[in-house]
Image 1 (spheres, rainbow, N blue to C red):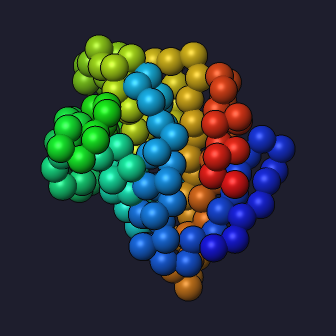
Image 2 (cartoon, one colour):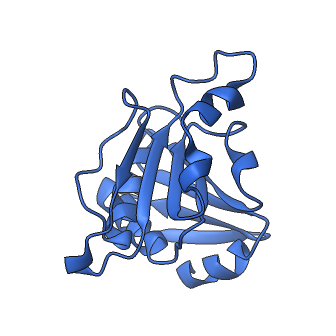
Length: 167
């Protein structure tokens, strides 16, 4: 793994899927209720693998799979493992054909749980940022050798300070 810093952004190269999950686990350890993460990147880049790691860091119940067809899944904390918050994992890939895609997001009622949960939305850029005052944009890309590059872009709040724990 290698990393670099661009301004307040953190860029990390992750050679394997296991490294992606491990990074997600470490990121999950920094998250708290009210956090919104907006994941972007092409199909197969590793967004769901990252969320699997985040779920491990949050210690939630249930298998983490892509919610593409159900749009959103709610994972409760596992008290036996020290779980501390709900994880809402949404996938907006099939949304966005409407004139105002934010209306489709509003139909999911993510705003009803955003204060009490960590909310991670794949493909949500331009649709969910209005739910909170500050969020973390996570840009994932996969090179031909399967190495993933993850860039964490803090947008408002105390994200920049919190991300220092990952450096």
